[in-house]
Amino acid sequence: MINLNISHLGIVQFKALLSKELKEAFRDKRAMMMAMMMAVMAPVMIFAMSKVMIKEAVETPSIYLKITGAEYAPKLIKAFNDYNILLFSNVPSDKKVIWDDRNLSLTIPESFNQDMLDGKTIEIYLTADYSEKANMSPVRRIKSTINNFARAIGYKRLLVRGIDIRLLQPINVIEQDTSLPNSNAMIISMMLGLYLLMAAFMSGLPVAIDASAGERERNVLEMLLCQPVSTVKIVTAKLCCASLIACIGVLLTLGLTSFSVSFIDLTKIGASFSLDVFTITALLLLLFPICFFASALQLFVAFQSKNFKEAQSMVSMIIMLPAMVPVIMMFVDDKPKWLDFMPISGQSLIMEDLFKGLPVSWGLLTFTGLITMSITALLVLLMAQKLRSEKVVLALS
Image (cartoon, rainbow, N blue to C red; front, side, top):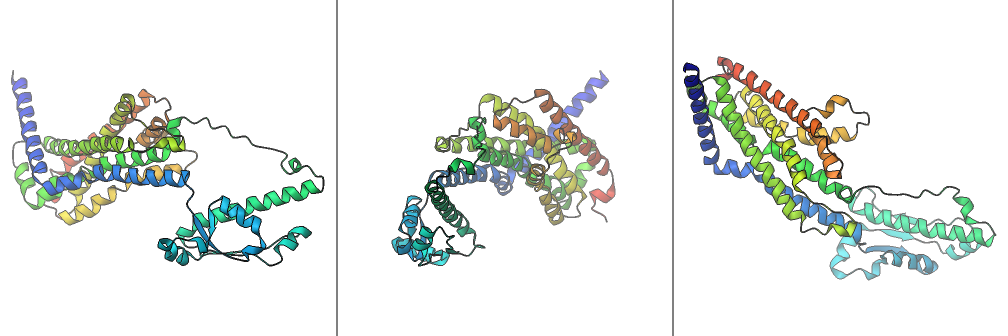
């Protein structure tokens, strides 16, 4: 009977602590807006980047090239026109300043036709600012067009001499793409995976900082520790509050992104992207443990800081983790097996398979989640232990 009363008292205490944390979190409207910023930004950025990606893949925008000696190579000029590379004299008035600043020019020698007849190598000069990012794509298209034209001339020269052009290519590689339609939308999937991880880390961040360093500066933490409540319950209540906000951020990011992607015509690039019930369930099972891990890590770091500003600086660096870990893993060919089970890296690998449409191991998913929650529990116990120290509570050096 006594044990039941103690257990009931513990539940009542935890409910009161959690209620207090949630009220304080939702009371600060500005902090909540900052917490939900990633949920709003992610769909907008994915939508905009996807539109640009599809436009570049499907459309061939006009390039305006200043050509000296165009009259000496009419067939080359025709080849340029076929690839929508036009003379600078044809540039529209509203784009004239832009293309004049880019200053792409091509010089064709007067001896072009004679050298062509003599079978000589012709030197034409392409002048551009190669350090300018805006020139990279136009220069690449110009060079590709010239190379295709030169290759066609070379083939004709061989045919005239009675040489089979197939001798130049003894091996012909025929590419067969076995990727699923979802895999063609991997850029969207990679962005969504990254933004979901970022949402898990960013959404609960303001709440985690305020519930730790913020309360300590307002002397609320000291008063809270004077109550007959264990430090484990205090830390767990703060963790649950910050994690709940992070979970809401992840749900909003997932929902709004799915809604925004539905307005993108991916069929233009032969791709498809949809989130079915199975995919959403798997994503939530992956991301909810990350929400708790991220909040626990933020609380742990914030409690180590001496003031609110220092906590903001230190915790802000943690946001880089979900961006850095997947990028680093992209450049590692022989990945250690233990990365499959670690927080962030394990979730990233499973999400990659999930978005590709590959079968996902529920055992691996569950085990990765358990490892993440175990590390979270360890951080909670460490924080509870440190809150018994005056150095941490009073931020003494």
